[in-house]
Image (tube, rainbow, N blue to C red; front, side, top):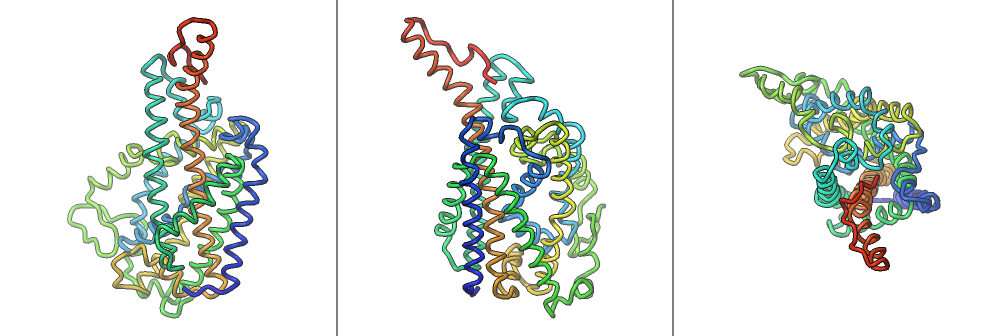
Length: 398
């Protein structure tokens, strides 16, 4: 993909604005641990909810959705749409309760709900497990997707792409705490969605595609089916076909049996972090409601349109997810290429910044402050007093 001066100027302007937001909010982040990880519990619903949506919009998300559509039609999205059931439970039953709990992380809830040494062990284990290996896995697959995008668009090798993106994100997220993360999320979400909507518009106006009517004429009708075909012996074709048992597993089991931050019933992870950061229970409720509507009902459709267009433009493509990036590479005019590349940077950075802040909150609040700090503090005190130090089980730290 050939970039003009305008393309590079748009990309540079995006990075400058993101860094300026981080620097501006660094003053608030330094006030307290609560300000750093929970924005002082002062987030309005529209900012907290948009931050939830932005965080779940990673660099790999448009590629994944386009791949689902290219392989199994629109109904292929039920692999993640089934989680909307759990999200609605979160909105109407749990959003207010997370804010009411007055805790800093969802992991801390273990010692609020249970008691004694088993609860403390559970809290410490989950803090380390989610904050380190699981967090690194999520960051790794987001890095891989961003590297694939930059390799196709800019010709960068994977290491260069990952280091350039990660260094800037880590800098402003470490500097500004959650205030900087959520405000940058808002800017990045608007920027990223503007770019993906523009790409869908350009894809539909390619002569070989011919708009929505052209897609309908070029692709089998089953590609546009909204729900999977269910039953024994149904023909898959280009649509998703599931045996009845598999379909009911999606609808009845998958949405509550799979863990992923923001999609599990009851809320958790960085979505719970945003709920606990809201101004009050009402703002927590509306933030989660806005997230659920935007995440499942509004945001995927530009990606779905590009996925359908890629079926027409690249019918023999083996890597279905790469079709999204190829549409971007082959059919965007100058200026918009920089806009879309910056949009992918925005999607990537909104996810990585949250993962870093959220994962660090577990390590600091639920491991260091809960287990390490009591030993260090009591050890120093005991050294002066000549008494044995207190163990981390002496008292529960909230």
